Image (cartoon, rainbow, N blue to C red):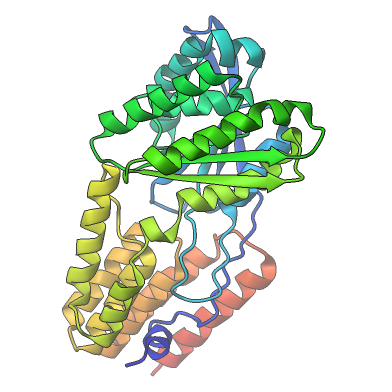
Length: 395
């Protein structure tokens, strides 16, 4: 059976545009920091449908988080999920935590050790305790905060799995040597676990700040190209005619996509082709990929809803109805906010002959759909689809 037919059978539209752009729910937390000796505010943006979902979310920790434009662009990028093909890879929604700086020159400079300890011992435990977080933590900083982000990645143990260093303030050759030594030590200590480092550099003529940093950016790029081990994924984004102050607006979208690259997090095309060609057992291939991925990143990565839905359809196409129903139920249990998972469950139940159970699955989906965020047009279309499916099951 062709891929398009399989997806239609699963109740997955061939053009699946998930564009529910609910304004992120933001919360302020006031931490009485023992390490800093003062109260500090962090602002937390939760993904849409957080209260309905059960999944755990990667977390972006944004330095200079009191700068609202920087915070808003980060939230917007991590919330963008536009899939124009049913098997497209989309970045997962993220929790964004904005860290307030009061005296950034001190906190991210001579007091950087204390501020890193504040993040590790007070901020991150608070976020992990209150919210459903995954072990993926991304530290984002610009200029002196970009330099701090590299140090946070290197000297924070496994606290952060990725650093986004936007035009980092690497000031001289001695500073560059410290950076390269720090990166080497982090990679050595990781023993092959995957680490992500994103760097960017502007190149606007007559921008004195960027002109000072740029030679060291280029030297770091050359060192990475020559010496980076395979466990360190890195990217250098060159930004011609972009000033130092503009670099965050160009860098953050590209950086978030880099960390979530399908080359890391999604099945490779040859494996996908083998699934639909029937040359490999789909459950074995999917489980093998996620087992290998979990080993690379150092924690158990759950199977994406997309692949659970497709696996259920493939199992059903072979008449393996108990397995198909079990897989579809697993998708609903792990991703209750995914209406396509409910539709897949209803479809395999109906095709297996259990129409009453299929009806109940659609009724459950209707209840969830009324609570999901999103534009009214999308909500209405989703509910109408579910009504039609229910009517099709009527005696």
